[in-house]
Length: 212
Image 1: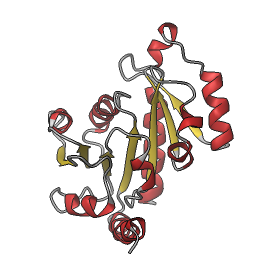
Image 2: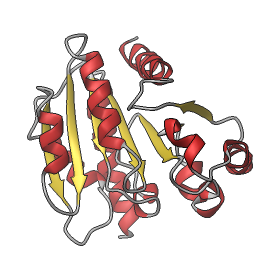
Image 3: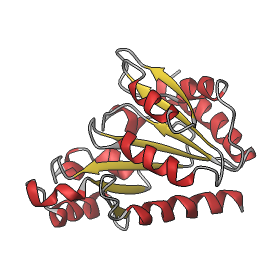
Image 4: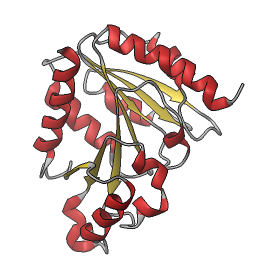
C-alpha cells in the first residue's frame, strides 16, 4: 500500500474523532525559527480558561518546545521523530491517546520545522496554518508551492523586523496569489503584539464553526 494512501486512512479516523468531539485541530507548519512555539504560547495564554486546549509537539529531538507549552498549564505531548522530517496521521492518533481530549476546544499540532514533508501528510486536521517569518525569503511561496497551496491560512510573523530585513511583503503576496489566489493572510508580531488580535479572531471563528 502507498505510504500516503495508508496515511489517509489514519487521517480519516483522526478527522472523525475530532468531528465527534467538536474539536478544532490546527496543524501548524513552517520552516525552523518562524516563531511557531512563541505564537502558540501567546495564543494559549490568551485563550486560557475560555475553552479546553491540548498540544501535540513534533520535533526531531528534545522536549524543549513541549516544556515551554506545559509552563502555560496546558497538556502537551512530545513526538520525537528522530531522522523523520514530519508528523503523520498514525503518530497523531497515538498521541491523542496520551492527552485528555479537549471536547469543544482546540488541539494544536506543532509540526516539525520543514516546508516540504509536512505539506504532504494529512493529519486529519480541521485547518492547516502556515507560518512564514519576514526573516525568511519573500520568494518562499514560489519555492515551496505545495506547502502554501495546502494551507488554509498564512500567518506572516515577526513583522517587527520588517525595517531591518530584506523582505518585500508585496513580492511575497504576489507569489502567494500565483499559488493560492484568495488565501487569507494575517500579519503579526508575537513579540510586540501587533496584529495578533486578528489571529485570535480567526481562531475563534474556526472554533465557533466547529461548535455550531
